[in-house]
Image (cartoon, rainbow, N blue to C red):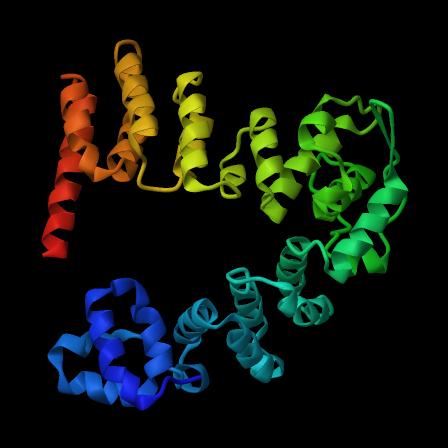
Length: 357
């Protein structure tokens, strides 16, 4: 899809001022836009952006960038473009292209993704199943809900669970992998995948579910709830499950502000171990004052007893705290790790100022 030629000068001028729309302009303006850009140095940025012709002639990286940009601008057009060349794509490209449909995902994509469940490549099938899991109205989600009903009965405050006895071809098609990882039994593995891919709406409120007793397969069901919250990006379940199993992936289902709020509370009660670092690494940037203060406090506290254990935490703080907060860091404490954070924040603030000039 291309924009009318008479709109190009205004669009290119807008792109000169707004970097966020440039990747989309490369697709929408096509060769006519590139011709105009070559005549005006101020619009030269467009020459580095992918165009529609990239899809037919470009390499894998160029085509991936093109599809990503088109998907952001027009999800339906991107899917139709992918469908038009699907049979000619390599297995590796098909897997990457399907994953890109996560941006702008809707029920309009469901028929294409349902067909992708029959792809020869396992990675393609898994990518399609992961996206269909995020569509509660999809045929695959309904099939998973039926399988869940066959495994689970809720009576009062008890969840009775009977794990599946076998993994049939229909389950495999819907993304259930038959062979478990080392240390996990087959039935537990199949159960975990069914629970993770069945719509979370099939359960009650997460707070109530977590309080219920599960006499059999308890650990497997709860672990699968975590996976389900991640796959389905359900904020209510992600919020509840973070208290049960605080992993960074759960935060991605939450708005940036809430991510930082949960992370700040987590930092307050945790030593700087690998899990703390992973959680902080998954929080959206830039970090605001609440999380920044919690992290600076943790650095100051740990510096008094375990200064050798601060390297990763100091690095994350310097890279992710909003650089505009460098005065907060500079005045927070005179200890060396805090001043290292402040110096990096000041450097970032100066760099952004120069880039914006």
